[in-house]
Image (cartoon, rainbow, N blue to C red):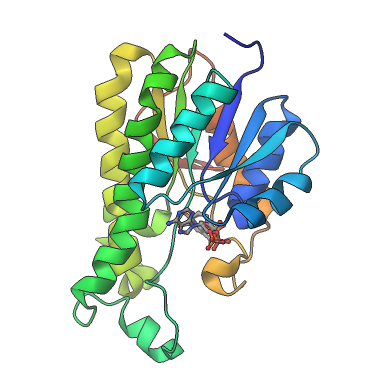
Length: 249
Ligand code: NAP
């Protein structure tokens, strides 16, 4: 097996994913910058100081996922860390007004097409990519999977009537609650293989996802996913946390 540990970050051509890729490269991992558009991934990889290379990866496209897994096996020979970062807050919205997009966040008004589209990336994308990378992760000495989730998906926090953000518990948040459930399922399933699977919330971070309204920097947002990507043998599995500590499911 090649000596340098390898990490794959999905949706790493911009935002928090790109910063996670930069931080992992700074820790001397070889980093694969997953990007659904290869040229944008290549531009992002060039901006990374260290060992980084773009890989075409659309988490909703099974053939793209299989090709990425094959490329990693043939050209890198190992995969130690998978960060499932790719995510969308709503379905692709050409021609839709802001008001329509906000309405589609509410389950009382969202179309099933909208909900399926968000789940396709935020939930099934995590399952599909993790499954495809499992043969490589199982061969790694210490496989790690981090799912980039959100405290907005916390059932506990959003069940509290005093939580002012609760009105926003809609399509996106429901997908993140499902991603948390997927985290618990993979963690339990892979415990015997020594693969640790955790969910990290980056906090409200200024990116395209929220029209740069987030108040945290990508450097801050990347910290908890990166910490969990690099945990040692004594580190946890099946947890949900942000930089300040554990979050309620
Ligand atoms: P972002 O800047 O919009 O980045 C999202 C990334 O996901 C982009 O690289 C995007 O690629 C990629 N992506 C979307 N659909 C994809 C697909 N089907 N296949 C592969 N890549 C895909 O948003 P971000 O804030 O950095 O989001 C990163 C993660 O953090 C997401 O999971 C998000 O839910 C989570 N999060 C963000 C915040 C926040 O405040 N920003 C808070 C909590 C959780 P394209 O460039 O091709 O669109």
